[in-house]
Length: 390
Image (cartoon, rainbow, N blue to C red; front, top):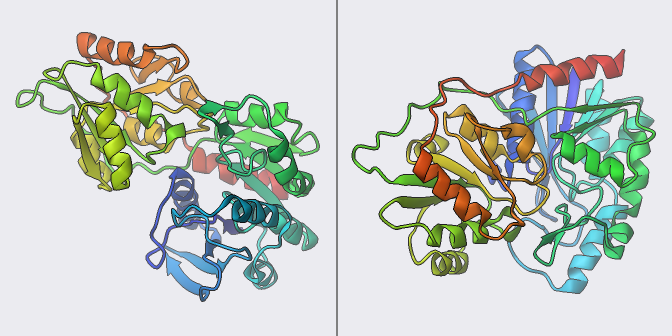
């Protein structure tokens, strides 16, 4: 079977930057398919004007091409509102880079499997359909419902789509008719799209979690003889919708002699100052670190998302490494945790709920996770591929 993956930030040695878990999951899935005997290619995006590249990474031939838009949205800069509006309009109605048509014609895949499409556009579906290629799309966020992909605005998770969301996602929604199978990374993720009128005409649907690969046995519990305090950890993007400000405020209320907070991931100096101010200067920022180093240094991972977080990779990674998770009742997080021994759930809308949950964990202790908590998700995808092409 030949599979063409589309993921705008598919990480490679030439283009290693990672923004979220979606691109990590897409790469892990592609490389698993190579080991399963499939022929695999991938297409990722580059900033406008950059020269296309080609490289082979762990058996996957990866093509990178510049997006056909006015700026690169992953640089961290803040364009003015008019530029943002222009970018989102062009992303909704625009065309895919020429490399997509070229690879469809030359590689002749059986399956085009798209993941994150911002910059590459949903035009890829129609191009594949025109050549008789089956189209599968996995939703890692809310790109089909919201131009920001988050359904989050004004400090709140959106329950209804605003006028700008409807206007700036009109074309991409109409293009979903080209999809043969739709996948949600959680049931909550898929259901939210359906409640907003999508996928009524899509023949197949499934819920398949992130495709992560366990590379080591779960870590043993941290030796607390040297430091008996409960060490809470956070790993991932440090943004408002991810709940990092809630976490800093809750941690500030915990006694200093009983609790530590370590945060792993990139954070601009100004953001660090904001978080430290909320937490009384007690946060240990680890920077961008190897997961083993992070999980070895913490007892519990906190996933305090305020948006409808579909399936944060921090949850899966933490459980794989033998660390339980305290997560908010948002998106797919409850589906991945449920109840102890894997973790705890709190309601982010209840004042003081996160602080009380952290206090309870300090008082009652944590379980030891000795078995990886991992479903065989890549095999589920392979079965879906065969079903879609039969």
